[in-house]
Length: 226
Image (cartoon, rainbow, N blue to C red; front, side, top):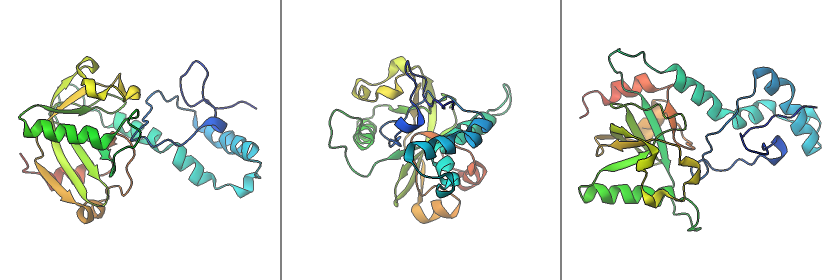
């Protein structure tokens, strides 16, 4: 039986070794996309073999939805790309900020990183953040900062810079070193949790990624923001 490799490594990681790491802290971008045929025909059987469960005992829909959620978000982000020369319509990316600090000081801590950006804003310094794994953000797009059960805040992307401009304090984010850096404005508007959920916003957010399905609704809601 052939096996599906998920990450482009010297020794590819196979399904039985795959762990659903929290992309807030471990957002790997080197995904190899399996074909639809491979997903349907091989993945459920391999998981069944590894877990010693009969295929009929597995919830294939849940397995596939969990493992490939980000795959479809990346595909949707590519579909949203705008032709050169067209009037720019703002797209959105979203980044989740953890509620608590990571107790392991050797690992990334999104809350600490965001606190640093807020302090930079207070000090009159430039706020900045990582782009998505596909590095497709453009000037004029919007970064949504997601806080669980609190709400979301909106920052305009003002400049795009190479990964060479990453802050030294981001050194623990080893999986993000190839991401371009987006310079962002101060918060220009926000949305409370209930309103966010009402327009179809995510109740769960993992990793920095594009927001496509509710982009048009977001454009209408923030129209007039500066």
